[in-house]
Length: 114
Length: 114
Image (cartoon, rainbow over all chains, first blue to last red; front, side):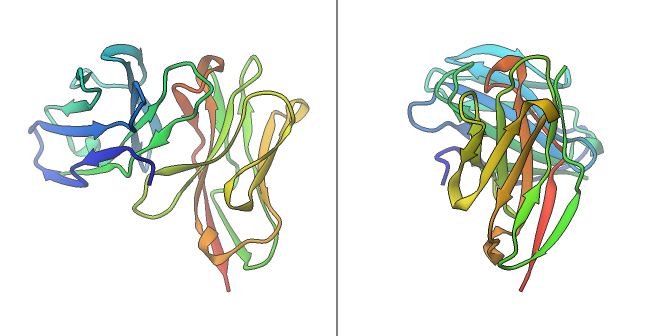
């Protein structure tokens, strides 16, 4: 168990809808990362937060947004969903950004868009 | 930009046989390198990491990896594979010389025959 908790485990929704994925980092970790894993794109970095502030952006679509709250949990919001958004979304956490401490991943949320 | 290549999509080995999974990276400076393992329905678990120093690094579950700068490689090895090692293995490089914003390879799926 990595200590990173993601909810829900599975999500099925229709095109055009909006969903929210939630992540609780490991105790003591201040930085949260979101990754998308799909068959055609592999594992891709989406966005990173550190202590409530956006720290880095990767290949995140404008339809997607995220935030990190004062209690350090994070939410990834996906809107105007398309079939191609179906993927496994991982949250990871680390003590701090740019540190040599590696990322610890949650078990992911599997999103299916129909 | 950094990149990672895992040339083997799928590898099958017999239980008890040795294993080597290949990983080549592209990065302009000294990279931060990682190997993660993903079992079905699970998140990614860190096997080992290389930041600097000794080029042969030991990880969990009996795995080791060797950093070879001249070959831009970071191959993962295990002297004797167990059936429980069957999983997908990902090599990753830290962007910007940090452990943040990992760039992952496409993964190698390991099958173990009894």
